[in-house]
Length: 131
Image (cartoon, rainbow, N blue to C red; front, side, top):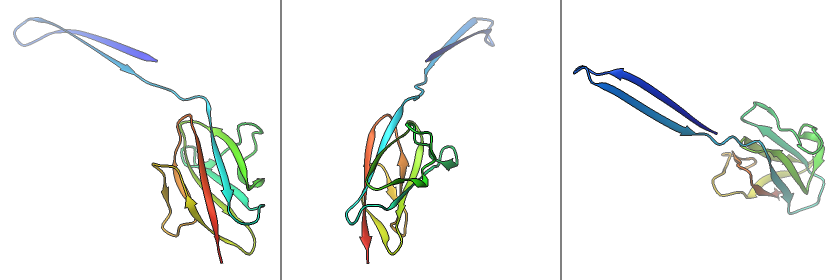
């Protein structure tokens, strides 16, 4: 989308002045994918918090929240593009640390969560169990 604005006026010397400015804004309306996997047994619950909306991320395919209830590893989940997310996994008896994460993302100080922003792309986050 391109917006253009024009302003007309007179300067201090009584000259007519015209100024025009344009801006282009890209609005992402599609979806992106977050692939979540672990390198041990399957079945860890997946949690994805939408930092942009300050609520659980929504699975674009099912509309279910990604709150540990409906998604387990390994999974490739469609989420809203253009949002920032925090991703982690849990499973009884295990502690997980982020093993690999997308370029431009970060890991929390304790190492258990990855967070960053998505365009219209797919990313992969891999967790390792720490015993």
